[in-house]
Length: 218
Ligand SMILES: *Cc1c(COP(=O)(O)O)cnc(C)c1O
Image (cartoon, rainbow, N blue to C red; front, side, top):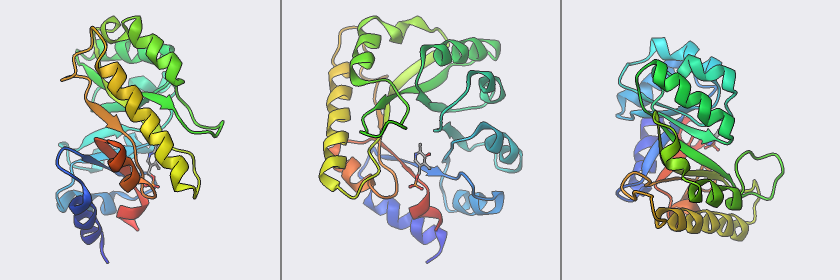
């Protein structure tokens, strides 16, 4: 099977309203172009250096999403063009994104990363920290940031029940925040969860955005 077959097979499994982020990390420009030519427009990279090295060789109407952990000192490199930063896991990072977005007179869309996995290695705010952030009005604090929703990763495990539980926990948190006073549910509308191995479970649990690399490019 070729990549455009992979793309149409995956797209056929996505319900209306669930967006595909094609995770193109480690993939060469020519391969990314192939997926673009098959109609895909949203691509995700997890490293700033790799993203800024490849982007000049690719069509300008690609919507780039940063999905990996981001150091504050690298925000300035992506601020002029990034479409969404999905991996916001500290206040310091939000402050810097706001500052850089202002310099370029743009609004940068972000997702708050929530730690739902049992693994220690995963980044993100805890569900409780996340509730507190919104209860204290984080959504109104930064003029040049729009908080569009939440992002999370399940534990890397063969235990499907566990993965399902973790996604449901995140969905519940998402719904709870969406219903809070002071949150506009039309702006806070994205729940990014699900990768190659678990995107079907994530969709069942209410994902609006899946991030798929391996299943698309291999
Ligand atoms: C690599 C990566 C993905 C995609 O993983 P696959 O298993 O290749 O689909 C999704 N999200 C994040 C944050 C990643 O780093």
